[in-house]
Picture 1 (cartoon, one colour):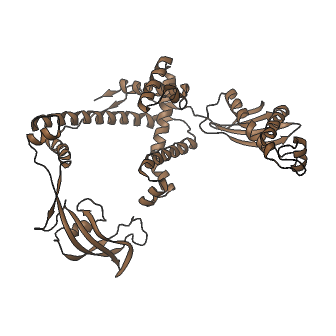
Picture 2: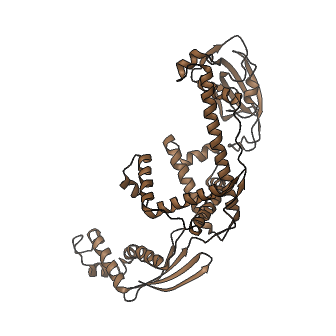
Picture 3: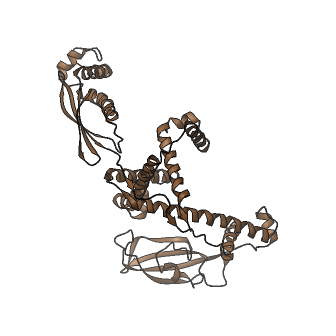
Length: 426
């Protein structure tokens, strides 16, 4: 393999012209023949017994070219890219310019490389840390979540339903006096105030009693998923069968002893306050980090290839797909449920993807400028942590993550800490 030319055709975009010798091409053809010969039939020969010369005569001289090229070219391209010192951000585009048994191969490889960026300032950045004070109301809300676990559901028959109740209803929706598809259900349980139905529906159910039959008038939102209903007026005929209310246990020392590790309400409240304060502290730290990183992102200068943003969006979509899978939901199902599509989903992730790409490039540049290094010992310690977290053997983790990739991640993490530690926090 030899590189005939290496030229920059755009910023961060290079074109390599590569020649692969006829000897290498011939070896690849022979390997393709050996791999395929058992499955090739030639009249007059048992399957797998025809020589390469016979097969090429029967099916054409180039019968093994495609397999040979597919096997040979990727390795040759990787070697050429390594020799050129390129750090690619996506797989290169390969074009076979010419193919000849006597002359070998000539290919053109278009490479998009990682850009160099500049950061105006990354030390001594300024921001404000705001830690929200924990109120008695916050503590009450947290404790109410605990009380919810001991909640009882009681039947109500001596009053109309109200916000917070569960009601069992029959309903059927009509548009211009005609029932519409999907607008009917029987013995449906609805939590009033949950926002489960379109605006105005639950509010109009409130105030009715068991046995009542009544109509409610609603207007579907303009952005409603079903186009035939979006923005349209509708009437729902309702029959109310049951009203159920939620009854929380009394908050006293006995309840605390039965449900927690504490003996008194006062001890529980103190512990809840401590936990909430720790959570608010972490939240404030996270907001500080985001504010500092946003300043760095805004100061990044450089031409960043569009493909880096596109690839990050696709990675985010793949992550989402994996998160949905344990719930038995495919990405197509999710898009259908939300009335969305792939283009909309990509647009939703675009801004976040741009920020992540710029921040990563910036932190890599900071690590380079600060000569940040990661030792082999630090790398091994991180591999051990990852193995513990994922309940895997260290060697198994290493089969998924290379030393170089992990060292880059750790260097980026050190650069992020440098930014935070040097910042001026008010």
